[in-house]
Length: 195
Image (cartoon, rainbow, N blue to C red; front, side):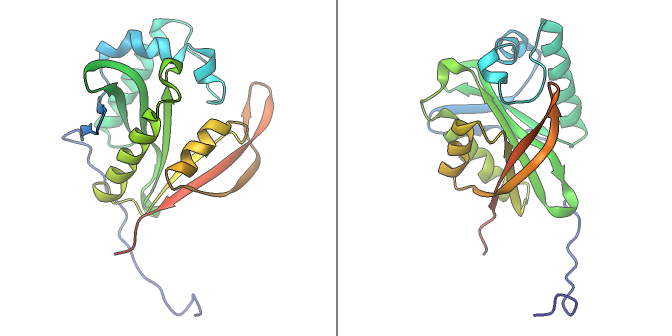
């Protein structure tokens, strides 16, 4: 079919993250991040293992975590991005974060990002959180597609995305400048189920 003959108009996606969509899964509670999470956020974002593939400076002081949480709160108010604290159901302490960043409203697409403290790696926690957040992205926010962008060398994150039904779209060559070098990005995506 000639694409020029068929032109569908789709209104730009609008998002409203209020009230905050708390998510409860079998083992987890995904809740709003607040200033009570400063110490746990600092522990997460200052850990070299967590930050290895994130391409952002690791937190050096608690003020770095305060600034990050303040930015998350502001972005949430402005409906430009949303982040959840990952907690175990029986313990409200933040052990990781997951959220949508770089939301492309005109394309009905959101980029998911996540981090988990190494004490909780290898237990299926992030897969459980990612599946829940993906469902909210499609069902509640109305995304047509969700993408995950990783360092191609981050094999654990790449396997996670594949386990959760994301397909590798390709590699962006040297599209990201970090720590004095140009790095590649692997792009994964998952499409909403057609009705």
